[in-house]
Structures are given as C-alpha cells and as structure tokens.
Amino acid sequence: LLEKPLSGENQYLVKGRYEAPGAAVLYCFDEIRAQAKDNLAEPGFRPGEIPPWIKTQMVEFSLTSVMEDVLKYGVECDGMSILDDTGNGEDLIRWDEEPEKESKTYVLGAPYVFHAAFNATLPEAPVLGEAVTIEQLYKLDDAAAARAAKVLANKGKVPNLMS
Image 1 (cartoon, rainbow, N blue to C red):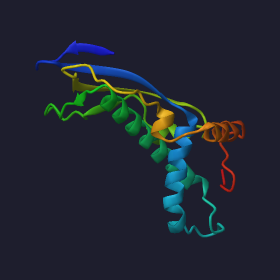
Image 2: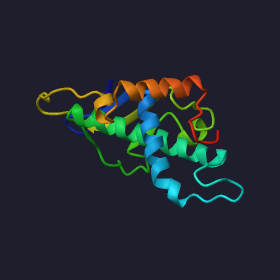
Image 3: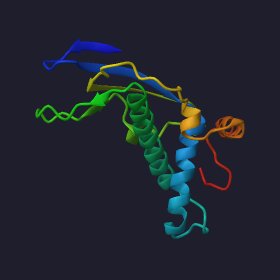
Image 4: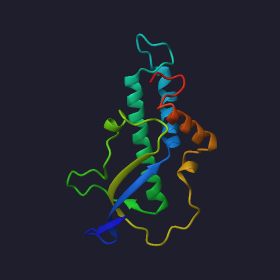
C-alpha cells in the first residue's frame, strides 16, 4: 500500500501486511537450532536438549529472520529501494510487531503475520521476471508444510526438543 508521496521525487511511504507460512518460521528455527546445538551446554539438561527459555530466544530470532527475509524479498521483487534514515532518528523499517514479546506466545508451525512501514523509491519501469513464492525462497516443499502442520497440531512442540 503506497501512502503519501514524500518530499523527494518518486519517494513514498510504503505500508504492508506480510504473511509467512509456518514452515518458513520452522525452517529458520531449524537453521538457528543447527547452528546453536554444538554451543549449548546447560547444566541439568542432556546434550541436544534445549531448555524452554533458550527455545523462546530461538523462536524470537526465527520470527525476526522471517520478518527481515520476507520484507527484503518483497522489496527486491517489486524493484523498490528502501531509503536511508531521514536523520530524525527513525528506523529504516518500522515494525508493528515485536518478536521478543511474540516469541512467548507464538506456536511453532503457525503462519506468522506482521506489518511494516518504510520509505522507498519505486522502480522507474515495471520489474519483469518470474514471480517467486516464499515457499521457493525458503525451498519449502509439501513435506516441510506437513511437518509445520504436525508441529502446530502438537502445540508447537518440536520432536527431540524440550518445550
């Protein structure tokens, strides 16, 4: 959604609603878990087990990754460029959601909806090319979607992971 034009030529405030499939969040979660598993050694937990408070942080990082990836992907697909900070101390991208808070209630496997606003320039000419879906961006297949549905049905509990 394009809002009011900004002071510069071809510059607009862009607001968007984005939805990432649960399999995309689970993909990011698995990537973070794979990177972290060798470094996790919590007293009182077996090797490979992740305590609930660390799982919450991993979900937070997963949500943040998905938000950034999906927005960046959308901007690139539309041929837009996000403008630099206006000097007013504003973030380049303003998010309506806060992954740190949402990670405490988000259920792994569920779709994740978020909103963002940013200043951008629009392409001079239409962007031509084949549209790529979020599923293709994360290389998700039917098995990944089925796994996300299974994790969601299990109230966000990932096998071999303490919840």
